[in-house]
Amino acid sequence: MAQYETIRSVGVGARAQIDEGLRAHMNKVYGLMSVAMLVTAGVAWSVGTSDALMSIFRDPMTMRPNILGWVVMFAPLAMVFAFGAMINKLSAAGAQLFFYAFAAVMGLSLAWIFKVFTGVSIAQTFLITAIAFAGLSLYGYVTKRDLSGMGTFLMMGLIGLIVAMIVNIFLGSGMLAFAISVIGLLIFAGLTAYDTQKIKNDYIQHAQAMDQEWLGKAAIMGALNLYLDFINMFMFLLQFMGNRE
Image 1 (tube, rainbow, N blue to C red):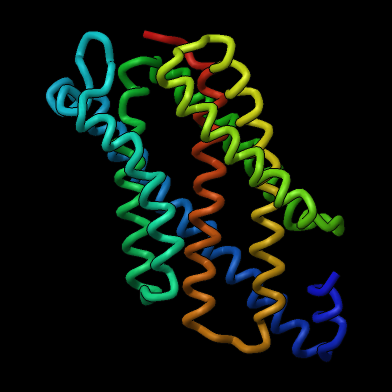
Image 2 (cartoon, rainbow, N blue to C red; image 1 turned 135 degrees about the vertical axis):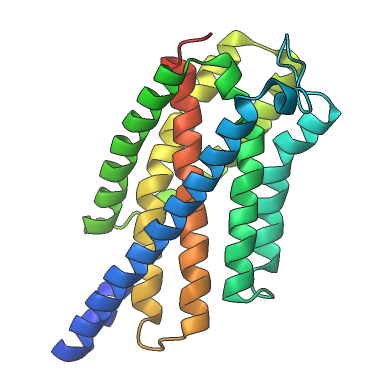
């Protein structure tokens, strides 16, 4: 693989510097992701545990979204596409601010789970997701196997999954919802390992240039990808493990 050829082509001192820089880069990625998760959790809990705030987005009795609720539901998807289109025009600080704003909007879109599922089941599902995510991300980081080949397959599956989810909003099929949850869980489990390896490989390939602006943006994009992997695994697992109120 190209990244391993890059490492072998540099001297011992440079190799050690790349290794040290990689560890710092990965720590920054996970740190940014963790802060975003806290923002999402804080917003979701604050809104989801308040009847007054929750009623702004959903019917208090049926939990069906109103017009504003639909906007909040699809806003994160629109922001992801916008972020990808704007990343080269934003500064690293601007990209980080956008990432945290996205995490807050995601919290609004997920607030309903605190009305539908018990707090204990949410906490248990979060813990299991965290353990699974850590294992999958560690595998992506340490494996010598090239996972790039599965990237296209997973992205095609993700597009199909999004289409199926939109269709099922109108169909309301329980069987389709179950299939979406199973397939979605598998897709984002694979993406967790794939994205982790890609973050590592991208850093190694650009390490010698040491472009601080690029490194800052790359860490934010990596954190966003892993954040999305975690959130989606959590939500699909909650469909199986969550105890409803």
